[in-house]
Amino acid sequence: MSATLVLPGVLREHAGGRRTLPVRGATVREVLDRLAVDWPALERRLRDEQGGLRPHVLIFVDGLNVRDALGLETAVPEGAELYVAPAVSGG
Image 1 (tube, rainbow, N blue to C red):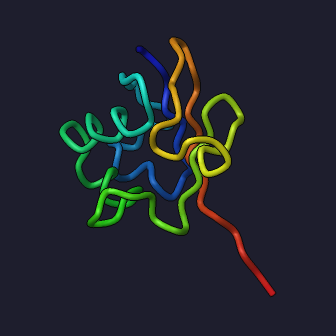
Image 2: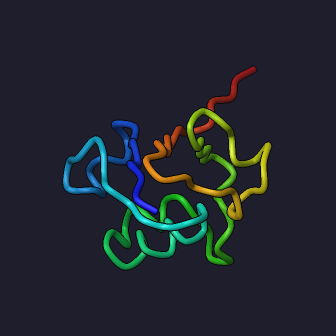
């Protein structure tokens, strides 16, 4: 499946300054696996050493937070937009 990954400003330096990247994969895991080959520095900021999403990273597939769905097994439909957002916390 072909989709678009939309990056926040803080991660763009790891994607050659790009705001968006074309990505492929049937699930979020597949997208990130392919990202590890093409953009390894970017992928390392999204996933931990065990392959899970880092706690401070949120990924949305067409507006659905993957943490509220099937996690890395969340489907990525053809033409989907995957948004990466850093988690925000405060007190």
